[in-house]
Length: 141
Image (tube, rainbow, N blue to C red; front, side):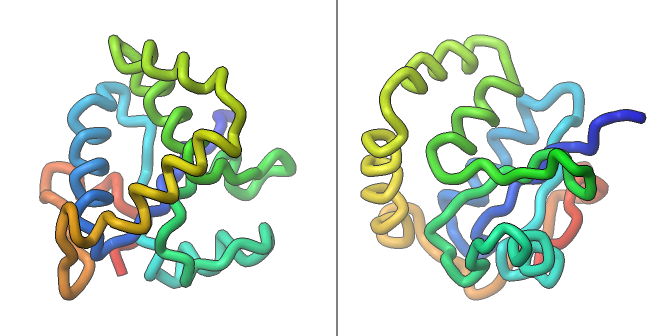
């Protein structure tokens, strides 16, 4: 049985998050990742058993092994590093920063997350996916 696709859970109204989704989609040549907005029922149901709060829109998640005994969540900087490593190419070399302790990486993650709306904008509602990638989105709202 094939491993389920990793699922990126993102803030659907965040300009930075939407740009990062576009970045990932363009570089994910194998079509590995699926996407769901944190504002969706799907995300709420996925996060609840892990004790994660879907209303915490500052947090970026990657869900691995959905609906398997190995299901787990990667959070914040570790989730971002997983995405870079998985899309590969030159991007995987940035994962060298993963040698730093998580608390240091998450400190910088939180600084960016706290300021993301002022730096990258905010939408009034979750953006619909590009029709070319619609099948990669589980839920956008």
